[in-house]
Structure formats: structure tokens, C-alpha cells
Amino acid sequence: MTNNRIPGHQVVADASCLSGTQAAMTVTSTPQPARCGTTNAHRKVLTVFNNSEFSTIYWGWSSEVTTASGTPIEPKTLMIFNVSSDIDVYLVSSGNINTRITEAI
Image (cartoon, rainbow, N blue to C red; front, side, top):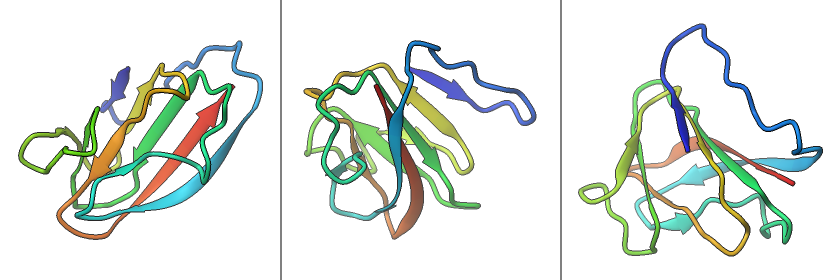
């Protein structure tokens, strides 16, 4: 996974990812898997962009993740996960936070 937190810098993605899906997702206080609707069965890469100006979201590997136990994704930060579709990344926050999700194959 990559965390691009340097303003004005670009992130380079794996060129073997030729297509994918993207969606807006509202992250809430109930942990939920990061998905574009139903997960693409051939997913290689998952990205999570915290579209909030001020609020942090948190991620973890299980549905038990909390804002106290999760790893933070700061506002306006992109996280890239090299994970297949059989691995869920769960997101949680302390309020309703606008997030962008992509799944690439």
C-alpha cells in the first residue's frame, strides 16, 4: 500500500491494471468494506481517497475496526492497496465522510 501525502506529487500505478470501476462511498461510524458496489472478482488494486477537507477516516483488515484501532487516512489523502478481491479493507469514521473508491483489474 502507498500513502501519498505530499501535495503536488503524483502517484504512479501499475500499468498492468487496464480497467476498473470507481464510486463515491460515504464512510460512517459502522465499519464497512471499501467497494464499488459489488467487488470485482478480478481486482488487483483498491484505492481509497478521503475526499473530506477536515475529517479522518480509519481502515483495518476486519469489520471490528474502530476509530481507536484503525490506521488513519487523513483528509485529502489517497491510499493504494495491492489486494485481491478476496481481501476486504474496512473503513470507519466518527461521522459521514465522502470518500472515493476505485477497484482496478
